[in-house]
Image (tube, rainbow, N blue to C red; front, side):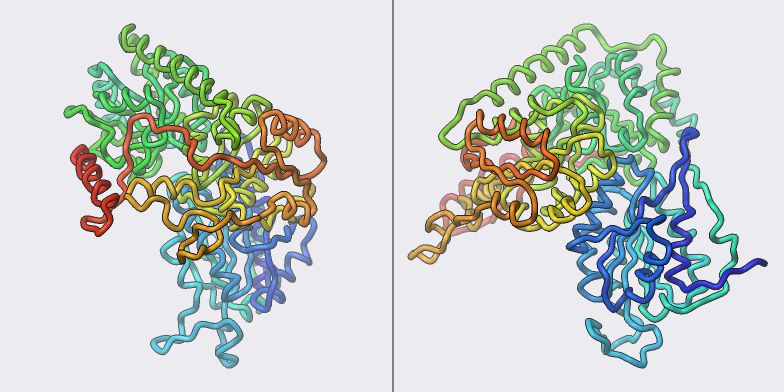
Length: 620
C-alpha cells in the first residue's frame, strides 16, 4: 500500500481538501475552508497544516469561536447543506465557546465540522493550562460537553484513528437525515504526531447526496387520504429548501389546489404573491393560515419538525378528525402525530405524489376562501408598513422600508427577539432564498455572524441583517471580520432599549416586563432610571464600518439606499417603539405561568393561561 507520512493535523486538512459532494449531477467541494482561532491547543497541529496547504485551502480569521460556527451555519444553510466550513479552536474556553454553535447546527440539521483542541493525550504535563480535572477519570475533558449537541463525536487519541474517523465524520455531514454538528476532539500532542497514512485516504472522494423515495405502500395510502380530504393544508418547512423542491412544490400546489402555509425555516418555499400561499403559520402566523390550520382535516407536513411555534403549542389543530401525512428524510419527524410517514426526499416525493394525484383538486369554494385570505393578508401587511407611527417608528414600518427598497434577490435574515415573529408575518418573499431565519435554536448573537456566512455563500446578493439592540450587544465582533474579508453586510439595528420580545412574554405571564428594559438602576432598586446611552453607530464606526442613525421613515429610506451603494458594511440604527408591536393573529404560545403569586397581575395571567391550555391536545 502506498503511504505518505503526515502529522494528524496535516492529514485532516489534506482529507478535507479532497471531499466533494454531488446531487443531480452537480458536483462541488464540500468544505469552503476553515475558520479558526489559534492557541496552544492547535498551533503546532491543524493550524500549522493550514499554513502549509494554504491558500489552496483557505483559512479565515475570526474574533469569537461561537461566531465562527454561526458563520459556517449561515453559509451551509444558504448553500442548502451542500457546502460548509470546518471550525478550529484551541482547548478549554476556545472549545466550549463552540458548544452553542454545535447545538445551533444540530437543532437546525445543518452540517458543520468542529475541530476542538484538547488536552495532552500523553498526560505527563497534566494539568495543563485550561484543563478541567476530574477526580473520577483521566479520560475526560471539557470537549465531552459536545456529545449531546453533536450528531457525531470522536476523540482521536492516536493519529491512525483518523483513517476510520474522518470518513465517518463525512458520512454524517453529508447525510440528509443525520447531519448536524460533527465534533472531533484533537489532543494537542496527537495533532503533531506523524503516521504513514495510506495515500488512498487523500484521493478525491465524491459523496452522492441521494434523493430517497418513500415506501410505495405508504405512498398509496397517502394518495387515498389526500383524495378523501376536503380541507387539506401543506405546512412547508426547511426541508423544501434543502431539497431544492421549490418548483416541485409550486407545481404540486397548482395541480391540486392545496394551499401552503410556511414555518420560519420554510418561508420562501412559495413566493408571497402565489394565490394559494397563506404565509406564516402558528404563533407568528397570518390570520388566514391559522384559520385554515385550525379546521384542516388533513395536514401535509413537508420537511418540518413541528416545533411548538407552527403547532401553537399543540392548540392549532382543532378538527377532531385531523390526519397527518409527513414527508421527511428524518424518520423521527416523519412519524410525528401518528402520520403516514413518507420517509424520503421532499422533491422526489412531491413529484411521485403529483403523478398519483392526476385529476384530484380541492373545491373551488375552498380555493376561493384561501385566495381571499391571501389578498386580505397582503392588505394587512400594507397597513402595518404604513402606520406612520411616531415619534419612535414601529418595527413593522422598519421592516416595510427594507422590504420595499431591497432587491428581490437580496436576503433578509434574523434569529432572535421580536424580529423573527414580525418578519414571519410581514416579509414579502420574492425569491425562494430571500428569507433566512435561524429559529430552530433562536440564538441571540447569530445574526451578524450568520449574515456574514450568507454573504460569503452568495456575494451577488445584498444581505440585510435584522437585529435588535440586545442581540447586537451580545455579539457584534464579526463586523470586523466582514471588513477584513471585504464582505459587505447591511445591519439594521432596531433599538427599543431592551429585550422587547421577552418583555412581551413577561407581560403575558403577568410580570410586566421585569428585567427587560435597558435602564440605569433607579433609587427604587429596580432598573427604572433613565435609558442607557448606548451609541450603536459609533460602535460600528469603531470597528471600521459605516454607522448611521435613521429615526424617521425618510431618513431610513435614504440610509438603506446609501447602504446598497456602499463599499463596506453599514450599520443603520433606528429607534423603535417598545409598545407598538405587530399583533398576533389567532394562536397562543404555551408560556408556563406561576400557579400562585402575591401579585394580582400574575394570578390574572394564570387564569388566562389555564383557559388557553384547555385547547391543547395530544396528536396521537
